[in-house]
Each structure stands twice: as structure tokens, then as C-alpha cells.
Image 1 (cartoon, rainbow over the protein chains, first blue to last red):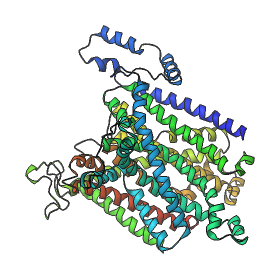
Image 2 (image 1 turned 45 degrees about the vertical axis):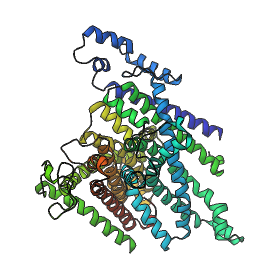
Image 3 (image 1 turned 180 degrees about the vertical axis):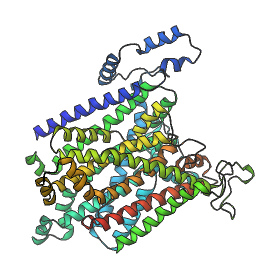
Length: 315
Length: 273
């Protein structure tokens, strides 16, 4: 187990280093000098040179890469070219919108998907199962931003239960904040719940035909008891894998959903920064997203072992 | 039987949109760049079957031309995934356990760590928005998917007897991969291709919705939705028409994928996409 964790930790480290190199290299080849962009086309060459020096753009690439990575490790993401404030501060402010949104959506999709999958697997081939399969097929096909627009029309414009967009901030109160994130979270969660229900259903169906389930029934457990005591835990492995993958989809999906609801999250920050050629912000936000995805998948790998003790001896 | 029903219905839905896209090359009911303000925001009428947008443009024509963009972007992106991913997967399987295999698979993991939208954002940050960059962004994400599916399928084939006899006959790993492994993976790749195609349509819609995909005046379903956003309360058809087109196309492709998988590989029947 320790050896496995160390091995995974090493590969986590390598992935992060390579990802940071790729992101840095990609941003480096981007055309357009940020200093020239900030000063406009009429800027004098010596003014541009002075600003380049101030932004640290005149030092060799290797040195800049090391400074960027070193800075991030100590929590210093640099200074935004456009707003002249620490990038770390900008990201932290926006993170308080995007992260709760992704977590709310993940919770919601899990809370919907697990019972639905369990229900369908239990009634395999029956009408309930067919209805679930049909609805989830539809759920997968619905683009989340379109669904978000429909939610706004129904619940914000017609019923007036929620606001159509914007975020009042957590200072306005926890409930007010949660309410503002409810529609976006539902829009993000539903397509993911459709996928997760299908995974849960098929994982359970696979398990139901296993020998140990027959043994459990033979020793006198009812179908439900066998499913709860032995089936669910075994079905969790594929479900966890998909949940890990979904987290990255939710973070990325949040970028689009934030546009629909005008939420001041990481997604809007990235789009603003792209249009203002504030590449240092783009670079850091993308790195942060990739970091989150890699770390979540690492956690999922470790969670397998916690869920399935058999893996401990195999590894 | 249920499988073939799904397959036929899914294929019919997909073909409808493919046909609409093809027909739009030679004929559309109205020119999609034609601005007709007196007839703006019309509900579906005898003249404009799906209504008109805020510039009076015919929505049916826009959907037809938009289908072209969606299908072209998704199809080329799947092509990129197959052309690069499949050879990589075959290579990794043929050299199983070698440093080459390890390197290909780790590179795959790395691409998976970048959600496709993040790749698209990076690409647009550098090269600007547009249909070509959307293709590259979605295509890059397809590479590891096909590499992984190919490697997985090929690994189990390498254990089979007919491959062993091919090796005994003195064929090289490369020749076996091309002559024996690849044809046996065709079913798997067709099914995966259908799934990636539908994901590509969704991704293209998402990218053009946030302005990173096809640029005006080229109509795209995603941008039609973005335009509709501020008018959806008084002209809901502006959102329902392109949304419906996306949902029906993706649904058709997914049903086709399910049906094809049941038809081509009965062992996998009932598994989720």
C-alpha cells in the first residue's frame, strides 16, 4: 500500500511538472507582447522596454519558468498585467464562486444518480428501467448551457423563485449565496447525473450476477439486503472513477455555465484575461484547473484501495 | 430486436441532420446573411417554418447551415483522434510493457488532465477563436480516447491464437497490427467514433456559445443560442430551435452508437455509453 501510494505520488509529481512545462511553453509561443499590448501602438520603444523589465519579461525563458513555478509553490502567482493586483488574490476571489458551484453540482449529481441507478438496476428490463434509460439518454444529449437558459426562463423569469444571474457574494449570507448558485448547479449537475446513473446501473447489474451475490442470497439474505451489504460497495469502483472524471468536466463546464449566469468565477476571469491578453492570469488559472484534475484523479486512485481491500494485497 | 430499433431510429435522426447539412450546400430556403428587420422575431409561419431571429434571418436556413459547421467540426475532430490515436494505441499494444508503451500511456493521461474546454481556451488565447481552432481543441482531446480504446482492444487480441499463428508465420509486429489487429478492432472503433462524434457536436456547441468556435457570419448552433439568451423570455423559439437541433443530433448519434454496439458486439449489450 505504501509502495503503491509512493509510486502514484511520484507519477503525480511528474504529471504536474510536465503539465506546467506544456502550459508555459504554449503561453510563450503566443503572439503579441503583453507590454506592447498594455501600452498601445503608439508607445515609445524605451517605454515598452522599461515595462518589459518591470514585468520580468526580459529575463531568459528558463529563469522565467522557474520563477513562475517557484512563485506558485509559495502562493505567489505574479501580478496581473492588466489590473496590477496579485493574480493569486484574483484567483482566490473567483475560486469562492467556482469551487462551491462545482462541489454543489457534484453533490447534486451523486445524490440523484445513485438512487436512480440502484432503482433501474433493481428493475432491470422492466418499465421503470426503460424509463430511466430513456430519460438518461436524453439527459446526456442536453447541452448544460441550453438547459441553464431553460431553467432561467422557467424559474427566474416566469416563477421568479431565483435570480436570473449574478452573484451577491458570500458576505450577503450563506443562504443567499447558495440560492444564487442553485440554478447553475442544477444545470451543471443534470447531464452528469444522467451519465452517473447509467454507470451505477451497469455496475450494479454486473455485480448482481457475481458468485458472491448468489452466496449471499443462499445464506438467506433477501435481494435488497444482499444488494445493500455486498453489492453497493463493489459497484463503487466504476462509480468513483466516473466521479473523478466528472469533477474535471464540472470545473470546465462551470466555465460555460458562469457565462450563462454572469457569475464572477474562474471562467469569466479566464475569458476576460484572454481578451485583455493578460496571459499571466490565463497561465495560472489553466495550471490551477489542471492541478485540480490531476490531484482529484490521484485521490480517486487512493480511494479505490480504501473501497476495495483486495487491491491492497495486489499492489 | 430492441437494439436494431434503436439503431434504425438513431441512424434516421442522424441522417436527417447530415442530409440537411448536405442540402444546404446547394439550397437553403433563405440566404442566412439576409437581414430582414420588418420580419424579425417571427414565430414559426408558413413562410418561415421555424421562425426568424432578431435580424429577421430564417431559423431553418440557419439550422441547416449550422448543421454543416457542427458536423464538419465534430467529424474532422474524430478523424484527428482516429488518425493519431489508433496508430499510437496499436504501437503501445504491440510493444506492451516497453518504455514506448509507458510513454504513450502517460502522455495520454496528461492530455486527459486538460479538460477539452481548457485546451480550447489555451488554443484561442494563442491563435484566436475560429472553427479550425475548435477542431484542433476537440481533436486533441480525441487522441487519448482512441489510443486507449485501441490499446485495450488490441491487448486482448494479442493473446489470441490466430495472432500467435501469424507470429509463428514470421510476420512482424507492425504487419500483424495492420493486417490482423486493426480489422478486428473496426467494430470497437466505429462505436467509439459515434460516441466521440456526439461529444464533438456538444463540445462545438459549447465553444461557439462562449464565442471560441465558428465566427460570424458563419452560423453555428452554439452561437444561435448565445444570441438567443437575452431574448429568450419573449422569443423562446430562438432557444428551442437550435437547442432542439443539438439534442436531436446528439440523441440520434448516441442511439446509433448503442444500437451499433449491440449489433456488432453482443457481449457488451446493455452497457452504458
